[in-house]
Length: 255
Image 1 (cartoon, rainbow, N blue to C red):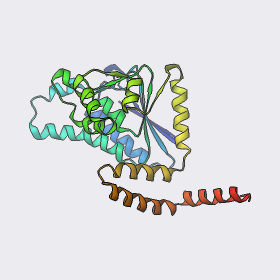
Image 2 (cartoon, helix red, strand yellow):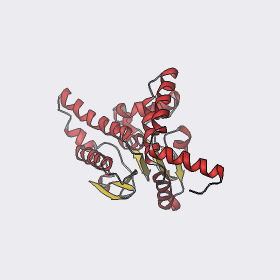
Image 3 (cartoon, rainbow, N blue to C red):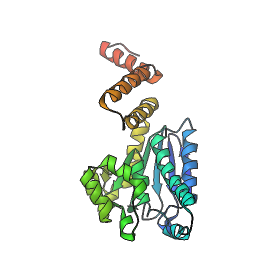
Image 4 (cartoon, helix red, strand yellow):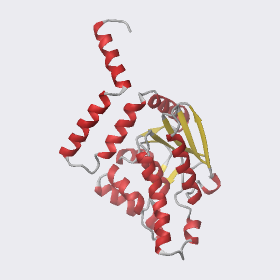
């Protein structure tokens, strides 16, 4: 269901249910959470890459599983929904950057899985969308993320039309970070991941933490949080080494 391979500095999490278009069920959620926790505990891991086997990234929630749970009570259904929400939350709160590499279709909860990541790179032929309304359902858990990355009017259209959009349009609306030509996808993704992994890890981790923590803050509170993070970052070993290296380069002194 999930394959995990950590080769420093990258931990690779692969959705491995291609016969079901990598549809999400309870087992996949649990295994994804386990893989994320494992990567968090590996000191040599700097970046996490989530990709998928088969032609599609993820078709969304497993509808067969959801149909089987139709007679469940409200408490049980709420717990099931919270498991998916907690997965998205775990990605957002993860101490290391998480990149989604999207080929083919990323739909519904699968699109939510992608946009929960810090970076979404998509093949030019990829399709992303939220078809829930077409079967009388609501894209409820993904809604907060869609609203954060797009404007209000565009979010409404994406969530109520039920129609997937191409990668270029997804880039324009803010759903994804960048589009890569299909023929160059694998090599470009590897290059992008390597570039991020080469950055000082504490600087990347603290940047991620601050960026998401200021979501609900007003202007003054966000500036105060930034000031506190500025002071904290200046005390890190990596920042001190960076300052000293810059000072040496300006003075002409050798390390």
